[in-house]
Length: 309
Image (cartoon, rainbow, N blue to C red; front, top):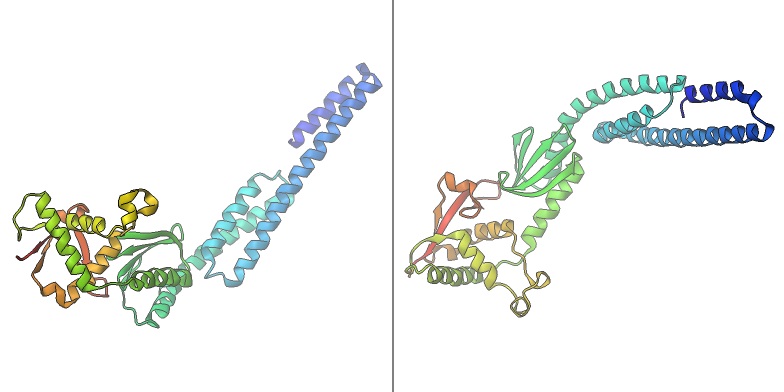
């Protein structure tokens, strides 16, 4: 309740006290007292929230540059809580402090933009990764990192923004480094046998030309061959009971990377031919797939594949 509410209540009580008996008067006083207590409890709760946020903000300032976006979020939270407080001298002081801190955080964000890139380069260069590009897009090995300084987050892609891996990554160098390293290690940890892959692709290709009623040696969409490959590699449990838990996933990123490994192997010279996609086809995931050319993030879109007889 506002101060004006209680002032009006006092005036009402004073005006009508003459017409009330003592019992009615005491009931009004008790109701009034209860409302005052509840109002003070609510005020105390809001003040405690502000104090808690201020303490959290103070701890973050120990590493202001690294925590700049967390500082900004905490300031916004404190500002919202301050809006719910009644007008009094400490609220006015809090608002003045908030305005001063917001200006300081804006300055820290400029320093952060510079230090972020330097720290990211430092972490990845220890692993001999090649970093290219400039804000807001950084190429890190096979990956692309898109930085959003407005919201304080990053999005990770495979290749030149081909397949999204993860979004809303905190703009913190170590977090970015660990996110990319973990994904990369998982991708490269998977067992890959170029001979087995070649024979499976050949089987999948034969299935496609049979279904399409095409002669052996004709080109077919690489994505269709890969779809048949995925079916070919399913465990027997899936065909006995084709439910989600029995399905073995083959993410597009994995298939793209395996094709890259295969193209580097001797089996890529055994009668298989990949056809580069037209520019228009590169935007159609149903008819083209991006395959890396090297570990530095360069690559090519391919649309068709064929096997010699």
